[in-house]
Length: 325
Image 1 (tube, rainbow, N blue to C red):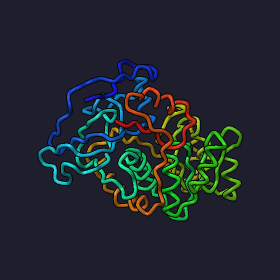
Image 2 (spheres, rainbow, N blue to C red):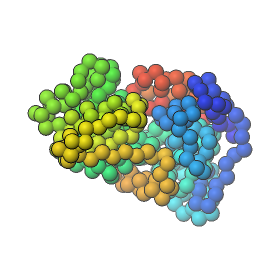
Image 3 (spheres, rainbow, N blue to C red):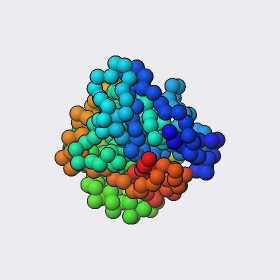
């Protein structure tokens, strides 16, 4: 089968197509013949040498796929050959075939094409496991999403609105902010021209927001606290601005705030399977009802993975970028 290999740490040019043996389904695994895979920021970090795959995961990039089950291993009971599915991976999505534990496999939501379904597993699992399973965003509460134009951001806007929250977003262009508002965001803030803390306080009468989903990391720590309401919760899922920073513990205590952080990729298979079950139960109905849509910015063939990475790195895209096999 064909795969995209990271030949050495570096820019998009280090991604090269290779022929390698087909994967085999192990105990409790299925092999999926890939229709498409979707890009994530983690793919770029891995290509740069900054985010190695967890132990036991494929060395090839790619954290989500869609396709058709080609074979099933011993002990598999939920799936059969020929099922059309999408899946959450620890790696290996940039390939024509991939093996994956059966608990990390999703059915295709009704109304979503097999190709576009590749763009759902990572964002749906990330948003549900953080905003809802961990910091428990409730109907009537407010959520601030940094990076509203990203794949995670565009998905989080729609899901939070579907669950009854008021949504604030930041993004770096008016064009992206317009699209965020079209998806249902209530307040859109251009972080390049506005102080998001001041705008949040203005819009909430000084109260602040209940939950913040943050991809920036260290530089936003204290600003996020300033924008947070009493008993508010911050969930950090990215470190695009840096990993080390100072925090005002006095403000943290005064606001009775909670700061949580986690990555999805390195979680144990059992944890991922539990998240998948919760996502199918709570998120799939919103997708099938048309309340949450898959936002795809660009579609390229697998052999143009380098160009797809350039699209993601430019940061002008809105939603997800897909590679097809």
